[in-house]
Length: 315
Length: 288
Image (cartoon, rainbow over all chains, first blue to last red; front, side, top):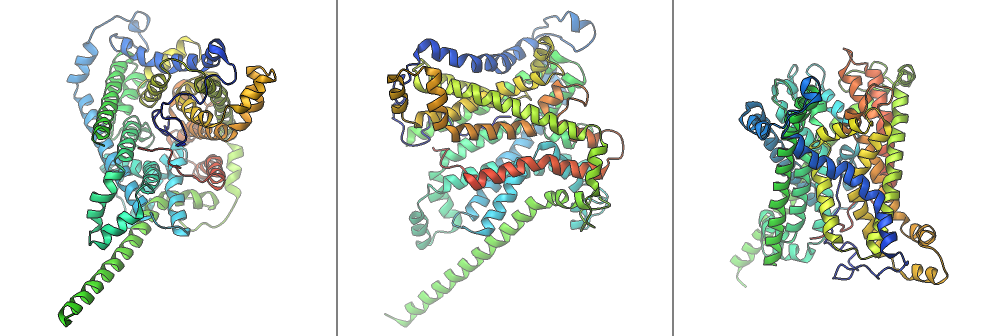
């Protein structure tokens, strides 16, 4: 839902003091009290609709709360039952595995790989080809998700879909035969724009003279990438991988295309939670799964912070 | 210089030129494939709305504008777009106003632990997306009597967007000099006056950025209104679009295609506007 541009400890304009302090202490004579007043509306909404739900997930996860029936009126604390049930549940483990495939396939390999390849291929181009390619890549990123979901349903349609016409494979039901592959390619298409733009900005930091020197010394493209480009944009790559992994992990759009089907073969965690908790009414169990998702998100973020920290130490 | 060495050098040069040529061709082929991959799914959106017998496939349309009449016949199509405008406008307004106040306070007054707070909230907002917290969000809305209420959707979306908005705006505020504010203060302006007459005009590009970004986010958001709104009369276009192709048997492709186009148009126009005015790329916003 939220797209983040950069981290707080980064200088964006480049002109800010190194200490990270405000430009001048309280130029408008705001005072602590009024400053706090300015903060209140935002903080109330953030606490209520962001922090509280996160905390509530933890509580709900240890109850047998249901949408309807006896347990709806008097939920009981059942301890870690939901978690043991989930971890022992075949459907949950399959869903977790599918989610990992989805993140690795569509975010790490698909979006980051393709995004970098496009940015690298366009790096020293100006003119119409670059603008057209960028426009289409960006368009697939900004259109509303329920529209692009239908566009892909139409594209992959069994009878008259454009893909079957193009590949001369009439009657192939891509969404039924290869549901995971379909949503992985869909999500690659959907999200590559972010990686492309980020890498395009990153590549401008690589001095052209260095690439030129490497090329004259007879380095192949692969060698240039490994020795000149990648070391310089490692920070960008990590930031990008963190963000797109988190977004992909939590993405609900595949629900609009396959709804987890057929037979739960594309049921990633986001869809699984929805089905269990809100269609199935098992709110407590759903909250437990949600909490596990939050934990996985946190682990992804921590791994990234660690890698970034190690990079800074070395530098 | 011996003839052998000379020939070796010309061989090398020829080989390098050939390799260069191949690389160029490879790059063109790659870019054309990329273009095809990204354009192919979008073609339907360009042809079907204007085809007098739209199909699920792509064909050269026999041009007509009659399809757009189906929009008027459907009871929910146009109202859902109005609903989307309400949700997007309301959320953007709240996000811009609240984030501007908070960002100004955080930028100008030293609050202990400010950076850690911002960083924590930002991380939380990218982790706690609607998906992982849909159960408590639903539960919370239920207890606050915000189920089937537009205000509920707006508040939930605002809460989710605020951390990143505050962060973006704080950068803008930090970059503006405080001398205007100081002189206004000397002349006795109150903090709110300073905010309205000095700070807001100076950071207007930042406010516009955050506003556009919030509108685009809400316009396409499916999950939150899908969770919190009951019945089609309050549903925004994102939800109506989904019901158009999942409910009621055979989908009406005339309606579906024209509605998709109309619903996509505002974000496409916004994108054209932003990219022509500011250039749609990261200006080193993400540094190492």
